[in-house]
Image (cartoon, rainbow, N blue to C red; front, side, top):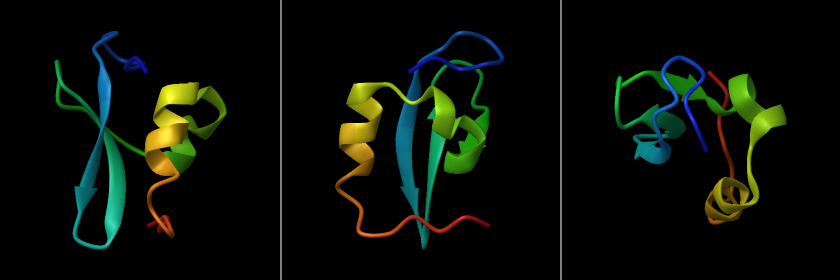
Length: 56
């Protein structure tokens, strides 16, 4: 999945009690609900591994 800001690659970042998508190029972080409509199949597959995702 690509970053909205710079077209860098977004990766899943697990932090204490939360999951974020973080750009490897510009370091921009996104909450899941900010990019939920744009998730690709590979990212959805990764997120399926987590039993719950907390929106904060």
